[in-house]
Image (tube, rainbow, N blue to C red; front, side, top):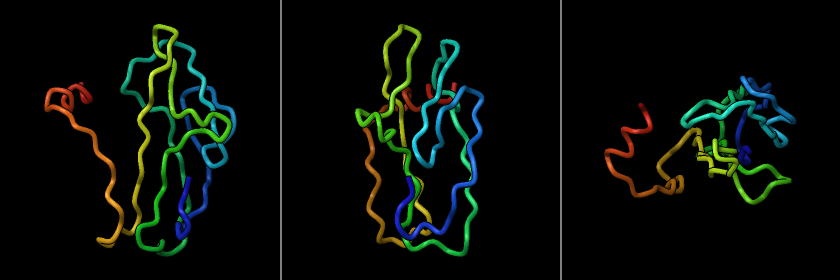
Length: 113
């Protein structure tokens, strides 16, 4: 999802998994095997035209038909919440802060193992 003032146009998506739809309109991604996080799910390409407005952003958001949120099936036939995110474009110091989550150093290191 892009904010007003984002000076870009969605070009396409690339995923090693089966996809239905697009990231611009709403995408569902199918997993054949048990995937253990973290793993890359999707790469999205945009063409940018000039400079975006201050604090414009791209955000990973829930599919319009699945408003319960981002999730992926884990190895136990259950759903695990997925981590979204926001990419702020052209920040100028007035952008709202991004929410953060309390963590430990061990938990952060585990993300990169």
